[in-house]
Amino acid sequence: MEGLKVSDANLVVCVHPSKGHRVSEAVLRELSSHLFQFSEIFDGVLLAYDVNIVEKNAKILPGIHPYFGVRLKAKLLLFSPEPNMLLEARVVKLTPESIHVIVLGFASAVIIDEDIREEFDYRTKNGKEVYCSKVHRRHVIKVGTMIRFLVKSLDKEVLHICGSLKPSNTGSIHWLDKDFEEISLIDRSGTKRERENEMKMQEHTVVGEEEISLGNGQIKKSKKRRLIEES
Image (tube, rainbow, N blue to C red; front, top):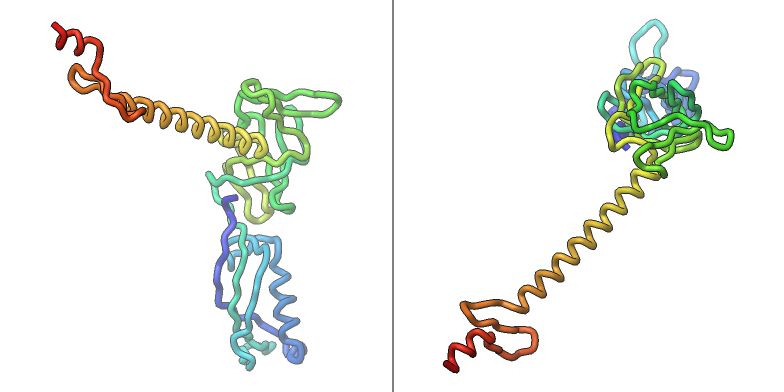
């Protein structure tokens, strides 16, 4: 999925002097406070981290309330979606006017009717709300379906995304991947037949008025050529 990236960062974490005897715990607690919310410092949403404290001796930072500055190297997993990226999400609610989804279990997104391509019809089947494709009957979107959608816009402060199902490469991930596999199989079988036909053509090569068969190791002259020689 797009929007995910791993970033290497050099950080300085401020630790209160009262936590001086438990620096590692204080550092992890500070980093954990930034999880699953947008941070301008990281330019994204922090999903996970792996840290390594560079200096064991912390430096006292100047200020009214002095803090220890602990330097560390961190590998950060960030979620940083941008417009026109393709994201994956689970459908949590369907209405005739919209599809509501959750991205990575914490970020909400909505796709309104004007951003749902005309291929999809809203229906109620067996008491359940679904969006069914008029082109491909098996392409169905319902609550619980994992979908792939395009980012139109986003509000980073509240982590709310507006999406679109207009592009043809969006919709149910299960159906999209299955359709891609079927197309790949058709392409491979077509290529195989082409190679077989090429081999058959290579077995019979015509030179001038003579037909040379390479398949059985014998050279046979065409009937037309033999008639000319007999006359």
